[in-house]
Length: 154
Image (cartoon, rainbow, N blue to C red; front, side):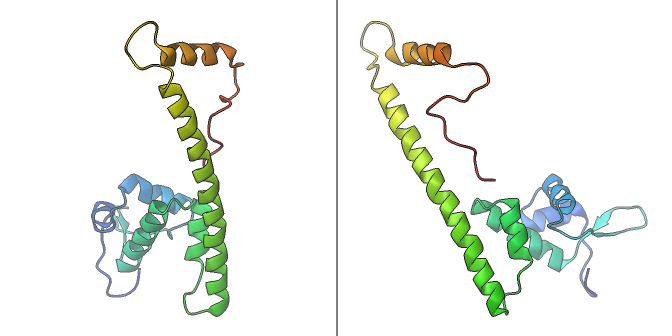
């Protein structure tokens, strides 16, 4: 904590940053946030710089960046031209993940629309429920459904 920073306990740091206290502890364990100072009673103490880092992490996570991507960006110096290039590379890689996810979501949308079109609710057995049961029976144990999106980039 820098000199002159008002010490905030974890609850206040959470309120000021918008990051839940449990997530703050998690980010400390993941090395995204330095270990905080402690009061004599062992309460964690955070300063303005820590709150800024927490807001930065929250923003990056809202952009669906992985912890590794956030970690990479936190290491960079915004005044260093080489670090600017590294930041662009990190975002380009993230854009690749987002584009892949969009394709997965479009495939999921097509599948859901097709499933939805199997029943109009007017008469007879429900084609949606029938199709879901049929797919469930055709699915070997332990394997994801064929139309399920791939592993999420986290």
